[in-house]
Length: 307
Image (tube, rainbow, N blue to C red; front, side, top):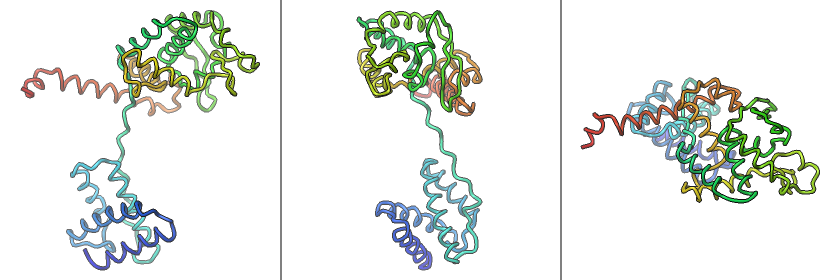
């Protein structure tokens, strides 16, 4: 690596420290990443002042070939962008080779889900409890899993939304968008049983009267944190790792189990209240991953290779 490149790197790091207030850890990370980039250029007979967009792409390809994650590649490219903008601002270069390079696409993490067997164990555990609180808990579990509600939508459900023998409920989701969500027979039965004991949980607060799950809290309804804690306690009784269960995991289970049984994405999108179907497409990836594991574990050729 040339002395000029080392000088440019140190000048860049000084600017980050003096003008941006970068921490020691941030500066160390920049130094490691940019020294590696400059070293790559040096092996090709290039320097920071004449490296091209093709060189930047070649460097990212080398990182990928070395097995570095897309997130790591994106972090390094970010450091490279800042360095080249600095060189441009300081009139050391007349162009920025990173401006024409797209960031590596980060793999979207698959959502945590529970299996159908685990979900049934959860419902059975709730059904096996006794008392008014048990009926309320079973109603919560059934609604989350049978309807795919967000926990924020669940705790703010108006009592009027489930009055009578309704087979659907009107839910107000993100951005004030409303959607109709169907209720299966188990969920309707759980709601009916809970409504029979709901008065036991009614505080004197007038605003609490209108919520399906009233509370003495400031908002007048159950909190999301309380629902999450109840589910974790129930997970222990059902033999499920409580770290793997949350209200949102049940929402994921609702969607992924529908897709596994043949539901089309547009229908699932409407049920979940997603504004963009791209958000819903994650559940096809969940199914693809299951199929991949199934083939890897059960196909005769795969099994034979393991022996």
